[in-house]
Image (cartoon, rainbow, N blue to C red):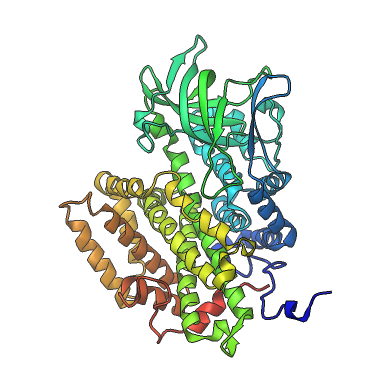
Length: 544
């Protein structure tokens, strides 16, 4: 029997047994805004069911176990045969199976597929972000494969299947397949044109053998991989199957798994190709062009993943402060804590609103929307992913010392938070990509200006920010050294324009005052005291 000194009081209950979709008003409103009304009833039910799954104690426990039991590499079987397999905790497979069944790889062929998938991906990231990598790679491989109609006809039904089949066997014998990607090499990093992996043509048209070393290979347990290698006519995209049609293992030598800061439930590997069989995807010498749509799709998933982490961090912070008492009252009612929570909530809502707007552009598919994506995706990827880390750190501080303890779940969010800024091109890569779009694709800037122009006249601070941005865009001197500054402003103005149009007035007011009008601080919690902070916090509260 516990002693009287061990009686526990004033500790918030765990945030479990709730619907993480319907209690996220920024997300659910964005889905309603961007979907065809005829789809809404179906999608509401689909996402509410997933939200309850994400909020359940069982699925949250799977996320904890997958993180605490990271994958292990098994290079040989008991008899000494080389197998190069990665073993995962059962919870990883349960999560991945749920993610596939929820349609996280099946956006391309469904009405409103990108918006409904984006919302689901944002929810699923909050359970355990690690399994988002193979889900994202598989989803994003589809547009690259479509450059070759024969390959697309063969592989797309497998990649968009709602069935997770974990066994390594010929893809043609499986009900569903997953894809990974390998572009980065030791000497090149983000400079993929420095890749040295060599591709030698075989007698059969379109087939090659590969020889080289990939420094980062995502999801090495997958059924197939898109990789870049140097063919006779230049850098080319290839499909590397894990198991060949005859049932034999392709040469895919996993040298080691990376020991990472976060994302520990997911396997990232160094692999070697040594006579590895591959099929060409697209034309020789056009590897970057072939794979660029895959990169764009995964960059949007970086935005969605960071928005998911931010939402979970804010939900945990608001939940804790709603139940925790200090200095004679609930923490959530203390003016200074309310300011911090409101500031965090505004940042989270801005990220969610922008991410879902970009997903809707994918669903639209029109020329104007494609042009908008060309500039908005790298700008959003740059800014949202960079805001994720300071937000999760501040949210963990709202729990005090409890937020520094593993059992709270907050340290896992903090460790995960920098990943999406690094993955698929770090900050400088995104900023330079924005410059390329501005310099080479006038339609991209026109589409962006038309998008933000829809909100002109609604808020004087937004109007001033747009004017300043146009001045910045007109000055090309030292443009590369100003690329980060310009990319940040592009993202902030776009977020502000969306919030002014779609968010409650108190949220838009807080964003425009602090992010565009200069009436904020370098750290969270410095919003003007005249704002309706209580309404902002109440909007962000998870309904557990």
